[in-house]
Length: 157
Image (tube, rainbow, N blue to C red; front, side, top):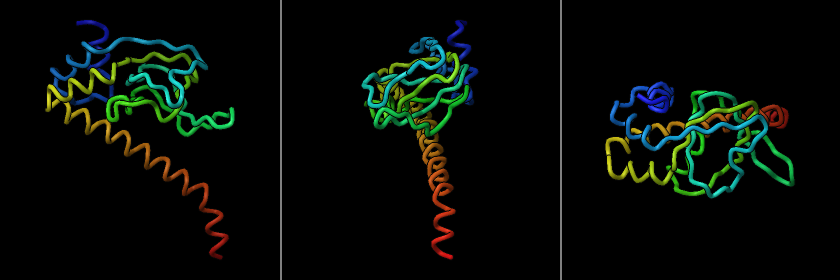
């Protein structure tokens, strides 16, 4: 069994997935390493890659007027670049390595094609991806509420 296959099997994002689904993903995966402060992909990037973090932390950022605003910090065991699979289009955020990063990288278009060929795999992966998107959306919702709560409380007093 290859190192990539073992990493796919061990990755928390893919926990509980059937062995044949792991094997399918392992055939599509490649390793990538990024030094600290390297941009994995810029906001709006049209490369269709999906990432599973193995080591290192990544900042998700919005870039405006030359400034990067961090909206989330991702740790090993999570995924990023979901838009490459769900939407088949560019990235919504910039991703930057905060420390040396090691990841599995998947070609989003090929993963999506595999979802169409293998519906059980597709449903399983889409549930995981939608869960990821939902949890990130909820986290951002809480951040917005936290940032405005003191103002709202004062205004209502």
